[in-house]
Image 1: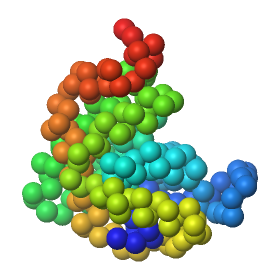
Image 2: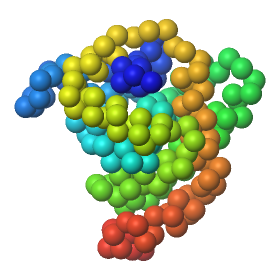
Image 3: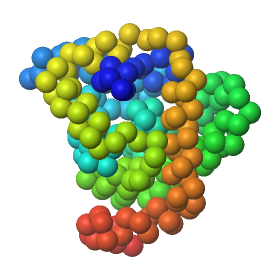
Image 4: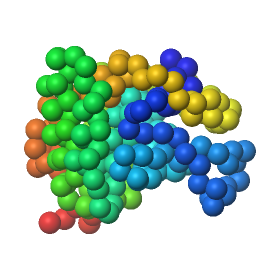
Length: 208
């Protein structure tokens, strides 16, 4: 997999690269600096933050990008239109065997939405994401993830090529959904997610 393929955006899919012209930084890029969900009119994160998350995920392997973005949405602060987003995602189901996987992915997103806020803030959120995607076979290998990250650091402008949308590949949608379904099976309840985090996240942040 190439770097541009990993970050590729698609026509009619739930997310896209966008530009916030009011944000400036000391990098060589000023465009495509954030991820936006058109259906729910929501900014999911700025490029710098998303790449920080991916930097933390290098050693265990990068998850499918769409799956990561859905987890970020479900764990972000503030009002969320998860039902609207789910309805939009449904339109991509074109094969019967994907329906069950999609239902499982939805269950996971709903669990993350109601998970206690203390698990979804600051560094705790990073640890949560690491825990969710750990040992997930849909993720890239550690070697490939580090290779892509290093390539991005050297040539961040490459990502701009990914912002040009192409027709949605069903396999890309399926991979996103499978990745979340796998996590849902691993953590069947919100309590199981919280239990996995105890002892990893700093105690003051998770005390009842």
